[in-house]
Image (cartoon, rainbow, N blue to C red; front, top):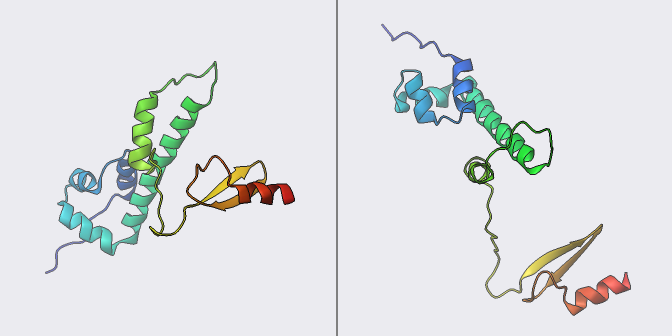
Length: 142
C-alpha cells in the first residue's frame, strides 16, 4: 500500500519564503527533510510558485524600505538603518557596489556616456567621464 500523499500548506510555504526563510528552513518548518521537500518541490509546481511568490515578496519589501530611507520625508515613521538596507540589497537583490568590466583583453574599452537625452558611444583607455576627441567632435557635428 503506497504512502498517503502529504498535505501541503502552500500559504505557509509562501509566508515563510516571504520572511526570507531558505528552502532548508521551510522544509523543517513543515516537518520534512530538506531532501524530501526538494523532491516535493521538483514535482509540484504549486510549491515552486509559492516559494517564488514569497521570495519575491521579501524583495519588494526590501525595495520599499530602501526607498523610504532614501526619500526625505519629515513625517516619516520609519528611519531605518542604511547599512542594513545595503546589506539586504546585496543579499536578496544582487545589488553591488563593485564595477564589473568585461570584454576581450586586447580590445579597447567601450563605454557609453549619457548627457540628458544624448548617448555617445566611445572607445579608448581614457577616463570614462571625459569623452575622447572623436566623441567630442561627433557631439559638435550633431
